[in-house]
Image (spheres, one colour):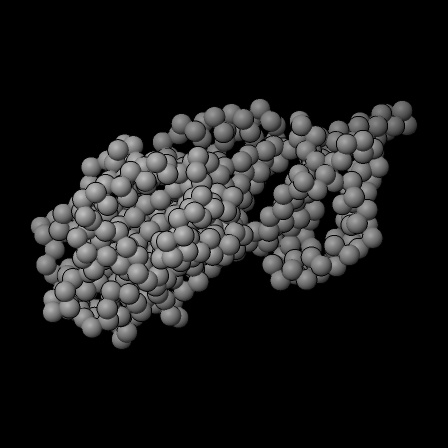
Length: 483
């Protein structure tokens, strides 16, 4: 009996040891949605993908989706093996049930990594997640690193209010990951600065290759009210424009019924003016395909392909107060044939990046217009426009500075003008900047210039525009002016 008992005990110990050493897989995918996507709709689809697809795959353990305050998403999935994780991803890429969801993701921003971890997820009630990945410095002793990594939790993180769990892992390229779960964002915020100052944290961070560090802080979608984010102003504008296609009346509630200042000179002020336009829509209604959408403080600006009394390219600008639209500007032009470089008024880059450079990029565009277009300091042209990489979407102008020069020569030889006389507004988000200017064009007609620029490394590399005459004042249906 004693021998049997010993054998039984040994069997239990071996079993427990085997289970505790079994590794699972942590899959981390980060991305942004496409600029025109309504994130509320995306969040609902995300929940459906989890319920109808991911949770039904072999080896699935747990899935979480979260988003940061800049619209960057993370999806974390736990799997029993790398093989099952890979099989699920391969199926995901071709499964019809996730097509709508996948089509909203900007593929150029998507990054996925899988890590082996030793611990099981047990932070079910967490609402906030921190994810940090990094390489260790060359020559770092991994045993020392792993011991220090554990001490970070026991000596600091695990003692903080709101802490739920800290998971660590490593992938096949020896990249490390740390995922920390908190009950709320506020408790994570409180712990952040003390962490940077703690001696064990400094020791830990000294072992990291700082150039490789990627850090994200995310609110889980399930913790957001009704499993959706409150609609951003950009979401509201995109929904309003999309209502042209669907006939949905709900987005009209995003317009302030008591204050709606209209700068489209062919439309009267207020909801009444908006309603009058809709009343005169042709059979089948108006159509709007939002190509690009951006948000800058209280302003949202969009680049849209319209069917609005005929095919048109348009820029719209909306101003918000207390979550409602109170002012609107636009500039429209008939859709033209592709330009000499084969580009249209709509194609080209749509990905928003460099959010930390928004103000710098706005200042670059402001300086370009004031010094070059208004001040005629043409010797500074290459300071602002990349001389070797300039993509042009103006219907009449080819790529590059040569295309710009050829257009100016044609204007001069034919007695035509393109003169900017005043810059009214500059709006931007990340690498995209919109300017609103007035001047004279063609035979000297009073004209509104709306220019959308994309910047890289502080220079303009891509340009779209809508150049449209300003109607004579006697035809205006409001007194607000074009700008």
